[in-house]
Image 1 (tube, rainbow, N blue to C red):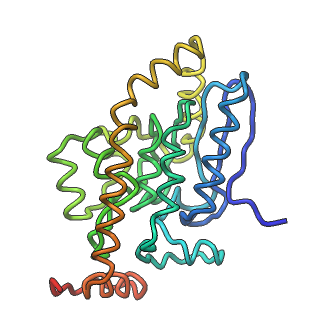
Image 2: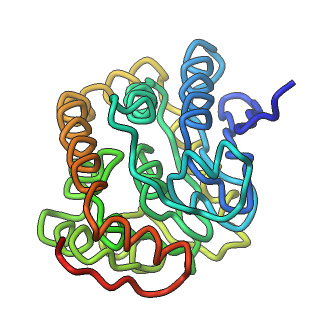
Length: 262
């Protein structure tokens, strides 16, 4: 039997869905498919009213890497998305569309696609010392996972532009100050606080909560397919550039990239 990339535990009314590819929990099609399957299955359980999304190991999710993730390796080696559509983003749409409220518990790094995954949740509780960044431009690539839609909705257009252009990294504490996360807590109490928030969400009438959530997310869900199509097309285009090759090579070699604009 293939090793699971996601673990699910249920203690009504809150389910815990855990990324199980630590320490880095690199994101790929298989992990996202298992996540979307889990979210949809939990939504069919009348006893389940909210989800805590968390991760084993050092990092919540250190980025997207199909090749390294499928091989089970720990080191992130970012690669451009394949040209023939994006199966990864197709699964991301499923994840965003699942009907149960989700609270993400973020420790360590939530970088690139990992930040995109965190922003798919309704709420985010971060460790004070967590590290969050929309880092694609530092690889010479366009942002993905719907970040061009989700990030401005949380922090405003101006702050989002700064994060997306520069790829700057911010702490969990600062993320809470600017609205990227809802709370920042000591790492030792992270999961407990996320579970408390999920339990509070699970308290009111579940059909009403789902209905309100669907209303609040309707514009986002309508906008995401076109946004992800645009993101993917630009990732493919930019993946052919010298800058993308340099950015990816520099990331592998753990050194600053030297971009030429070519």
